[in-house]
Length: 187
Image (tube, rainbow, N blue to C red):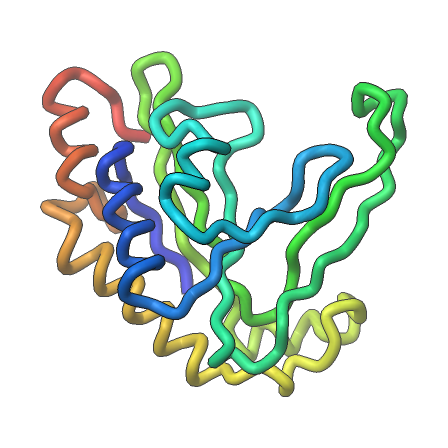
């Protein structure tokens, strides 16, 4: 399942508020900063202190969402880096797993708002990759019904409750709609 949408800073805070207050989803970095471990975020304040929810940055604002209902835990893997290409840093960590839900927040750059995204593997597509991506373990250890139910709730929130209109298949949330009316291009 994938769903793309446009969201301004306040829209993103509404989404995060739902995740923290009305779901059991835990929010992790997709990948850590150089030389650090993956962070789990417990509040909007924590996320706001680490990320600019308004502007597009070179490395973006990317999260992995996980619930205990999904059964299998996320996998935190150390990635070795070449210090010549990473300002002297030698490692970082990533968060992975077959049933994790990705949440990517786009931001504003050069008067353009980049779209945001949620998505995840389904059982069938994960199964195709299982023999290639061995570090994630067995696909059958995940509760795919729970994953699908959770992502359906997220998509419903975004598409039916927060979006005020669409551009093609992309939902336009209220704050992003106002940005466009003020001259920001939605892309």
